[in-house]
Amino acid sequence: MHRSLAAVGVIAALFVSGAAIAGTDLENFQKQVAKSAPPPDTTGLPAKPKVKCLCRDGGTSNNRVGVLRQFTGSVDAFGTHVVVDCAVPGFDSTGTQSAFLACQNFIALPK
Image (cartoon, rainbow, N blue to C red; front, side, top):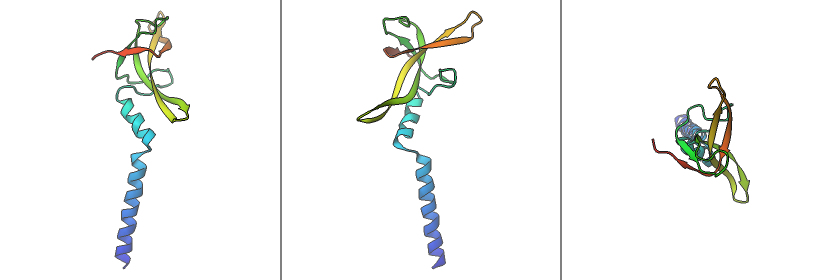
């Protein structure tokens, strides 16, 4: 009797820990999107960019190259959404990143 209760306890613990590891639907989706558009670090750009992009906004960033990044933001009546944009970095005269522009109208560049 004690062995069967212990076995049920172990199975329940494995099930619960597996569910905790799996994450929420939002977290799982963010991980999938991160394969192309990782979230930004403190500089505003991803630490390890995956995909380059070309801004096509017709404004100051037009035809400038950036990197795809994701963030969770847009919340509306349909829920929380993962947003992807093209972050176009700017560099100062020493070559250090000094700023970035967020571009909403872009095309992903092939590798």
